[in-house]
Length: 74
Image (cartoon, rainbow, N blue to C red; front, side, top):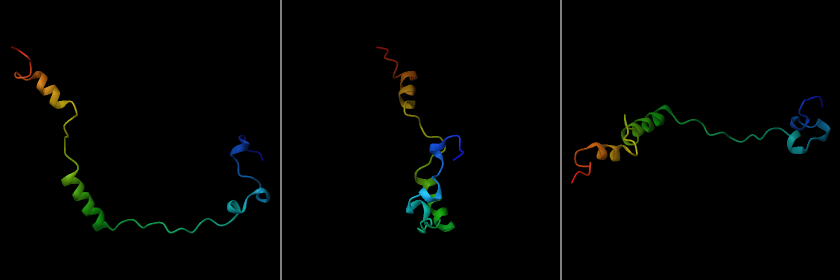
């Protein structure tokens, strides 16, 4: 083996296990969803999940601190 990192190179064919020598698995890959399905999911996400400018986790506290009611004046 002539690779600079010998541990990273595949073993010689005569030293490979049957799993390494055999043909790759012919498992079926799931097909991509149809365009109609993708469009439905996209529209659903736009309506129910995404917002154009979501409120930050501390935005309410910041507004309360700078409002007249939240200043703590007694």
